[in-house]
Image (cartoon, rainbow, N blue to C red; front, top):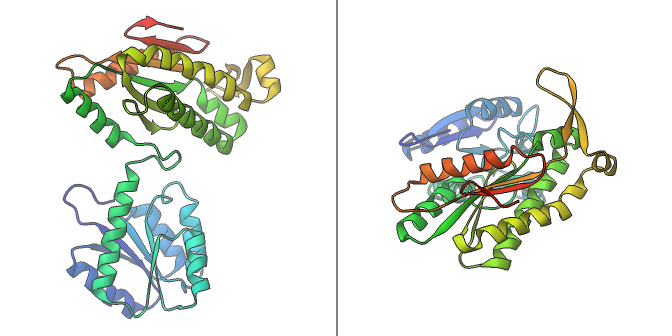
Length: 313
């Protein structure tokens, strides 16, 4: 993956060596680094190993065809986020529709105009860059936008509280019920955070998704306590029912510790830690302090809210 001043990397997958040569030359002169693959197996392997910035795929690849290669790339967590453009001689609209349904982001038909192809590649890279600052599961702003929002509010000097929340023992939930139900929990928590935003102060509350089951809320300090308590109540009413009834009645899951031993794991409680803004504090300092408050909240067996070292629940 290209970073900083490195050239953006394009992976070209086409079984025609002349196409690979000409397209590589065009893209190199346009300021891209180029990788090539001549079949579907190589495409998948190189994409997994090198993580290019964008992939150009011919649909008629030997071995694994373009459709199946795209499907496998989209189903692999290492490559699912990579932008994919179909470059094909096929002109049947049905072929293109299947490509989009499989997971492609754009397409160009052969023969193509070099300038148009380069423009499409750059446009797709820009769209993907904007998309990458949001969490793909929830659509909420990710770490880059969270940091920007904290910095903006600190510069304005408004009094706000940074709330940092997650679910205790969430890994045990995933292990017990699978990632699909785990993703359901994450999406539901995201929805709860957005509902809190609308309920308390739509114009002055920011909701972000750090990743996994970790979320951030920035809100006016005067609202932090009530908003946090509302979130915990809604979590217990709406998310805890996603545990199996038998596990809820028992009060714990049966799982393995890191040593491979069976043990009892408490039903996941919500932990919310918060820290209020103050003059001269940095983004990093505020983030670390909020994480420390959340760590304090996670020490309790039941859902807990701790803001500025005061336990509210």
